[in-house]
Amino acid sequence: MLVLLGAPPLDGARRAASIATPYERGVWLSGDHHIHTKYSSDGRYEILEQVQAAAKNGLGFCVITDHGGPAHQKVVTRDAYRELVEARRACPEIIVFQGLEWNIPAAEHGSIIVPPTTDEAQLIAEFESRFDEKSRRAPPLGESDAVAGVSFLQSLPSKPLFFANHPARRGLDSPHELRAWRDAGPDVMRGFEGAPGHSASTLTGERRGHYSDQPGKGSFAGYPPESYRTFGGYDYYTAEVGGLWDSLLSEGRPFYITCNSDSHRYLGDLVVVDRSTYKTEGHVTPTGQQRAHKTGELRYDFDYPPGLFTNTKVFADSRDPLAVLAAMRAGNMYTCLGGLIESLQCYVHDGACAVPMGGYLRLQSTGATVELVVQIELSQKRNLGGIVPELHHFDLIVGDILPAASNRDSLRNPTARTLRRVLPKDCERRGKQLLFRHRFPPVSHSFYLRLRGTNTSVDVPQLDPPDVDPWGDLWFYGNPIFVIVKG
Image (tube, rainbow, N blue to C red; front, side, top):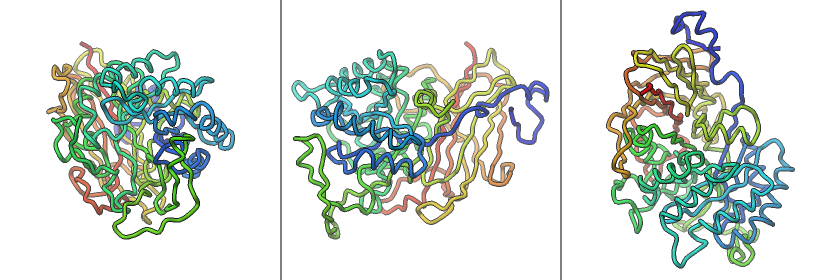
């Protein structure tokens, strides 16, 4: 039932006691929607190996998203799919989705996640043959083809999901393209990677998240130079309050974030891989030989196994593939790096109705009092960095819902702001749980809210230096909740 954290219920004990919280029935599942195998040109592992690693690290679901293109089309409906089905049989404790890393025409990459159906592999094969940028070179595909691809996904009876991957890395995903994809696939295009993978990259001499690019051909001119780097391990679009993510949310768009491993090769794995077999057979071939690493030599082992560092935690009605997809589509999920927290429950209510992350609390008129309820379970386990993370604070970020921007390349929401910085001492503590609530005054206009937290004392995420220790700079981000006043 609705818990109001030691204070009088919002609208009286009897009424409040009858309200069910959004987290009373269901299950939390950790997941990773961006994983590569030997069926990617820059991959390394068998599908079963990646699925077993995901299960070992406590994930409840994962998505195999090998790169699209002509070589992948050779194997997607036969060798690769057969092995994916075998991995499902061998690891029944984890849900395994068929997916694809889409080479989006005139843009970056995206994760496509399809529901488990008898024709799931055929669907992926058809989609990439028609809409993957690498499937056709002359004439090249363009922005309209990307929109057509999203429209194709939207037209399917069992609708997939599409999240843009590492959106700011090369500056190719312009604001108007993100809006066009959302408009073309309102049930399909649900957001982007808030935090990219390649989490061990700074330990191999690379930039965090492998964000080392500069503006180039096709990059959106409106993005500042710092947007090509990560901030606290998160994409610039996500980390900047009042930036692109907030601009999209200010239009009331259900635009959600995820994080994942983008796992290609694990840190410390220097096995030599024969990549010449990719074009001919559709997969790379590990030789079994170890490559001696030389100082200053480029390394490719900048990933952690799925679930070891990045975690998207989804609250689903049940442990069922379709329930997981529905929960991700609804945005009832949060992202976490390095085991910063064990769990986050976040919802708002008006004394009659309560909605969770991703949801819309719809008020019939102005003047209602709305309350935010937050429950955080603190970490109790030592992570791979050798520490039990300690949450320093979390931020309550709010922004107004505004009319849709007339400029489709708008990337600012001037109303977005950090309303409150919350320290653990500001919360009621019950063992390893922090309980916090915030009452908004009588609501006069529509707005949204979201949370983020860290183990550092900084006011805002900082641009990641080249040598940052990923385990020492940890963050979590919750997805938004919308409060909509009728009219």
